[in-house]
Image (cartoon, rainbow, N blue to C red; front, side):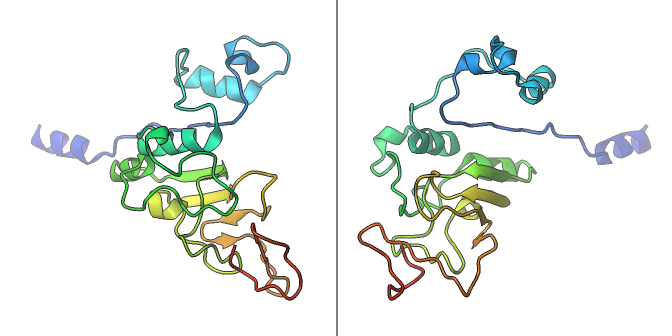
Length: 192
């Protein structure tokens, strides 16, 4: 009996996968698992069928940056200055010493990842060097992996960032971003 107990204790218990799909401009009735028949959503429907489906949920904000901030930190965004819709050159708005949902999941033994629109700022107050290591960002607040667009599709730079670097960055064609004036060939590169 002691050997059996030891063997059972040594078996790893499978943790359930946790997938949060957090999207802008999606209403309750836009998915077929919630009743629409206009646009079929079979992959989401399969996730809903095999997982947990919520029928009464609320967001802390109707806009992207504050609702993402609240989801990741558990804090009501509108009580913290600087958590409105982030400008394209915003530095990371979640302090790296904050207890976040991904940090808690890591503590529980999960690997965490974020994929898609970020819009919570990147870098620090000095700006972002788009041609070098982009930090702090998602990895510093608890994600093991990130593949994202920094803000929205209408804010420069329109790039993919994987972990700390712009994907497929061409060092011979550096990225220059300015939210205060025009950028030309003589402008300094890197900082926004």
